[in-house]
Length: 206
Image (cartoon, rainbow, N blue to C red; front, side):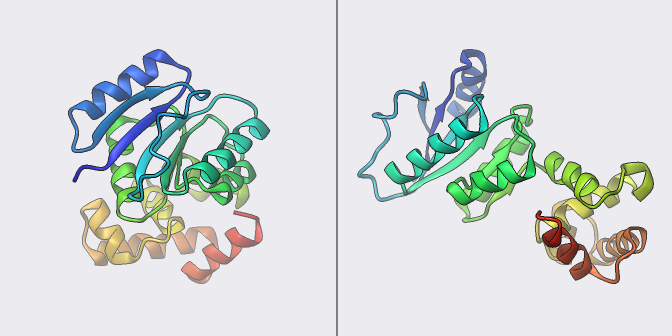
């Protein structure tokens, strides 16, 4: 049975784009609604359903709205689209109950991939934010790291806890090539191993 999907937001053109995208997808499109109108959601439906939230308000208001949605619809898989790129804010959104976060400029293919991850029990965060936080939190600029495009892709997946084999499958490369990229990244970042990258990220409040 197709997973029901709803969209909540205040931008008509954006919501229309979502409608066109998902009406022709494998999901069961339920429609677009305003943030003030949540009576349409199935509060007694035990099965999970997807809700794409487009929020453009201040951080505190967005967080409060997410907390309210989570209390009222605990079975909803919340996907937040927001232009807030503060790492601590995004972390708070996840702690409040969202399952995915992306900038409003996310492309359709990535959005569909993210929704598929949600239905498989995984979380998702916009890859561009991961890359931005790596440079900011780790204290490196892209030029200082001197990473190739492929190495940046691998680094992003490492931060998202992908294994070498999963990275290889995701990027359509061999596990050996993925491991080579991992080794190059470790060397360029000046850490001893992958655990060093993760440990440093945690220390810096990733």
